[in-house]
Image (cartoon, rainbow, N blue to C red; front, side, top):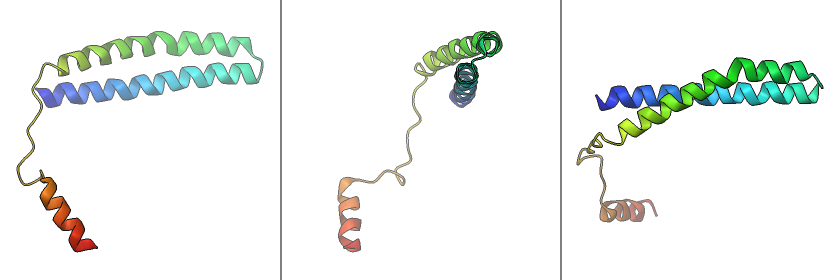
Length: 91
């Protein structure tokens, strides 16, 4: 279940970032080319979907905080002594 929520959170987060980028770039283009219609149209196209997706991402992130984190396998976790020994061998 945690993996599904994490996937949905990451997907919504990426969509939110893309939507926000499109919103800002559309408004920036309107400013640079002095086209007020572009600024308004950019807001109308991207604002509501971006805000909705950001709210959904926030909800998924909140829910994700209630799931316990997965524990790493002992083979993948290094103690500081092992890392120090490997660094000494490299030198």
